[in-house]
Image (cartoon, rainbow, N blue to C red; front, side):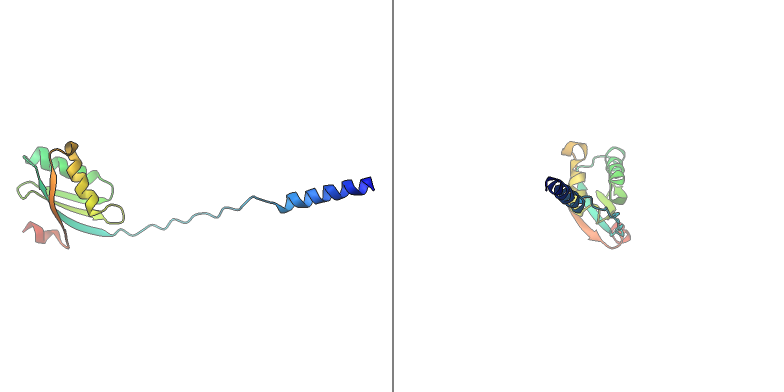
Length: 123
């Protein structure tokens, strides 16, 4: 009788432990790349005092910002022409970034406007 109890306890323990397999199989994650949603914006920038120091600095920093595909700053028109991926960065983020260049004391965005073609803005 004692031997039967021991065998029964061992069998229950084996079945319990084998039934409680907590190991889960991991399925590989599939990453779907979003196609770029390119937008163009013309930005009126105030506070620039020179072409080389100000306009080129803003253009250089914009060109290096993640999500921006191209940037051109025209000093004489106080204008920034920026093409960006709307999946990565927003127009508001770009405006905030420009206003924060040089500690946020020099440049500010007066206005920004979505455009279909930069040629229309430069004329």
